[in-house]
Length: 416
Image 1 (tube, helix red, strand yellow):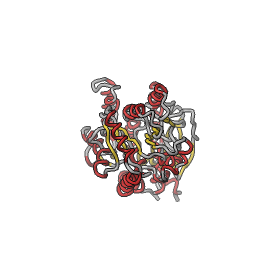
Image 2 (cartoon, rainbow, N blue to C red; image 1 turned 120 degrees about the horizontal axis):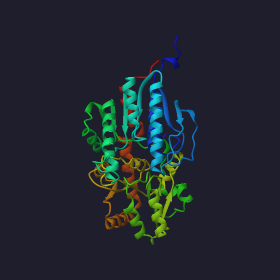
Image 3 (tube, rainbow, N blue to C red; image 1 turned 60 degrees about the horizontal axis):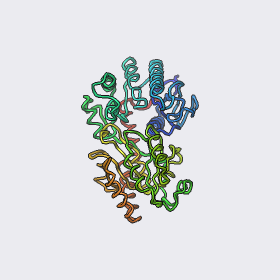
Image 4 (cartoon, rainbow, N blue to C red; image 1 turned 45 degrees about the vertical axis):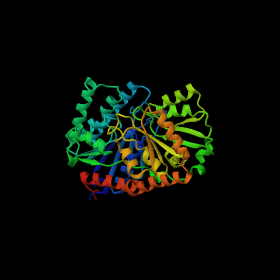
């Protein structure tokens, strides 16, 4: 008689980042992995053994968390300071994933995202050879992002190669999850058929986000913010999410001691923020690293208003999920970016924030003046509107359940 362990098939998950690393992609992949394990699937995750932002952090090579078996691979993350080292780590991770997928017994399918961006090529090749279904969570799109940021031109050889690889991946996958309607449109333009495509936003990690009144947040006391009006940007600092207009506004308002601008997180654009602070000797701006997931509710609750930024050319390419964390703690939003976009869609329907175009410093200053003049009770009402919208339509429980329902329709229910 077969034991339960022998009759269960394996769902492989490839993600260069995974908990306890604070990178958002890894945290969302962990949510899915844990829900699938809770449903009875054998879930085996392969990830890097070092921190995505900080390669000095080294994680256990093997462990099981909430029923998810995790294997962390060496030579898969060397940090983000060097493009060459990132490329080497990506290549090493992809080769290891391909070998693993070809060698895994009782394989039922492979689930992957965009960490690293082309891991889908290894998954697609393995899926073709093993004849198993693939699910792809499109957290961002490349070469679209590189072209939009001016790092590649559309006709460059590298861009054309990346596009061909993307189309190879999209032809081989059985399910593609896009984060918003604009991203879905870009995928449709690559001939992704409707029966493969699901449009679903990411979710906030509500179990780690306990909202509290700003003045009651220990995070405020720890960083000298009591009695200040706090405007916070929390998340990935990237050219895809420009912050120059906000920094310029902070410079113009440097003599207003009642205001504090917080930049919390990491990413390739973090150095630009810290250089700007140092160059102008700003005492009204504080830069902090990513906060541990367990401290997320405390740090997010310290803000009076949260900033969400989206580059003018980034609509449908990236999806700043930081808006959902701000909504979870019931805070209004100051949106820096274009419209239409998925963020503009949310704000236009439910009116819990303001929008300013990138580069319009005068509008940013006027809007900040308007925000400061809003009574506290009205700010709380706007925040509660955001929180209610999240719970009604965008909650973690609802979206993660729907997400895993789609995976089970593709991969089948748990065996035995």
